Amino acid sequence: MDSFTLAVASALAATIMAVSMGLLYLASSRRVCLFNWAVAGLFFTASSSIVACAIHFQLHEVLVPAFGNVLYVAGHYGILAGLRRHLKLRPRWDLLAAVALLVFGVHLVPALQRALTAVLVPAVVAIDLAAAWLLWRQPDREARLAYLPMIVLEAGFAAQQGVRILADALHTAPGMAACQFLQACDALFVLVFLSVATMSCALIVTHDQTRALRRASLTDVLTGWLNRRALHDIALRAFQRSERSGAALHFITFDIDHFKSINDRYGHGVGDAAICHVTAVASRVLRGCDALFRIGGEEFAVLVADSRADEVWRMAECLREMVAALPLVTGGQAVAMTVSVGVAGLDAGDLRWEAILRRADEALYHAKQNGRNRVSVHGVALDERAYLVQTA
Ligand code: GH3
Ligand code: MG
Ligand code: MG
Image (tube, rainbow, N blue to C red; front, side, top):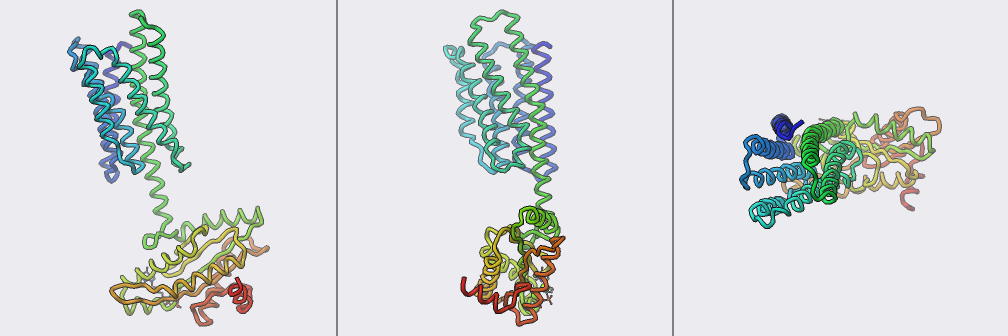
């Protein structure tokens, strides 16, 4: 394929990138990263079009490659900027401006034009490596899997550019045929880069959106705690782990006392705030627990793995004390609340995790029946539990 055809093909691939990222941007609640990638596609389109025009019309004015190369660098930076936006980091536009000025300046000063490759290629390599490194060091392993095509692409393209510089350095005066072959290879790599970049960007966003949807379907909107749907999967996995390892597994369940009267007295809005307040206080006490669930209107469950029974009882007692001690302050008035708490642990004969939750519910019912604002532990006499809590 000749250079002109490859430049036109690259312009087409870049246009596809710009259009598909633009459409995804419009269709997906306007994510800024997609906007950045659409603009990057436009930069690449403009850059490849300038190259195609320069070849076709034999344009030799210095400004033509100057604009083409600046747009090419900006395209690479646009991809990095989108990745930074995706990771909630600000793009460094000042750095792009500095590099663009440098590349443009080198074209304008005849004495420096020979150093163009020494400026342009390292700039592109640095941008691509920065993008690959940025994604590689993300701690989220599941997300990193979706980043993998982009990491390989950016690192691979940087490596290809490095090999190109080396080839240039080794063959100081390549023949015409070799020169054309290397240029065709460069153009081919740009074409592949643009095509794979489009797919990789789409993959990153699609994967992220799928995860966000899954998270939303497992989370309670009011409190941010996990919901009943999440309970089954998480409890089953914890139960199977405990069965294999023999480690302890407990449920703490709790329910706000006389919550209906809070609704009746202060209204539904304050009722909602009271539910949030209780979960916020509980989150502080139960920090480090495996999972916190809102399993009903004002009923909650906490799954505690790998903790001794007396530690779990103490945790439950601390939760009860903290809720009673910290009223919700709203509209200048304090809304006092208490919770009744039930605790149960895994028994040797348990075949399903639901058995533990059922016993914790029974204990909670026991606490309600015995005056509320108290902790009941399934299968343990109340005074024995009280003794353990007090001497801890
Ligand atoms: P007990 O001490 O026996 O638990 O009494 P209670 O009044 O807390 O229990 P009951 O089950 O009779 O009432 C719970 C109330 O919680 C009934 C329902 O209207 C209210 N509720 C459930 N979900 C929500 C919610 O999301 N927001 C608000 N504000 N109220 C809710
Ligand atoms: Mg209640
Ligand atoms: Mg209830």
